[in-house]
Image 1 (cartoon, rainbow, N blue to C red):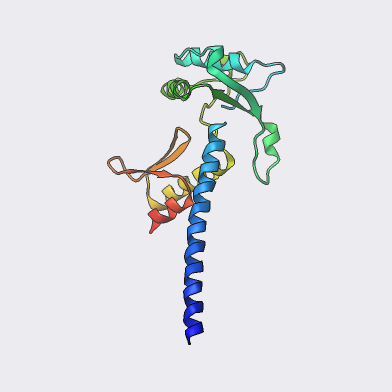
Image 2: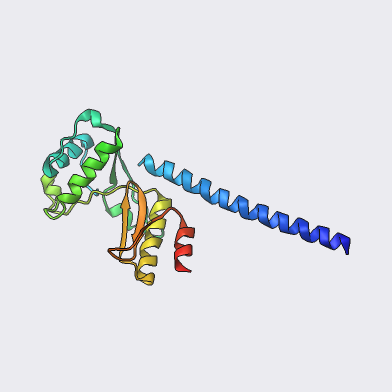
Length: 192
């Protein structure tokens, strides 16, 4: 009987350790994804294009001045749609990393305020009249989490789901508290 008690105690201690390790693992995974997110507008592609010039042009259209030294890096990245080869028919996304978060936020805010005007590819000298969208580019983990958050909102009667500073937020109604969705457990805790 004494051995059974010791074994039971050992099992309980191990289950507690496993639970702690899972929490720590989730926390570390979230931190990794946040770091990846910090390191990341469909615009038609043109041979020998100058992405920095395009970003400066968008800035001038929406009323914020972008200088060459505001941009740390710019490139295109292929779209990835699981199980679909249609992503090859679309231009690659433009990724721009600003040196300062405040400049990035200024640019995104100006674009958001100018959305009712509607940016078009023709504004950047392209023949197409297609609408351009400028958003924070999410890592694959946060894209999936954002999708799940939107699904959660539909199923749970939450009205708002948005991204700000690469963070996902949801809110039930105008006067309710906003929740930062850093991982799926946040959604699970809100559904109970």
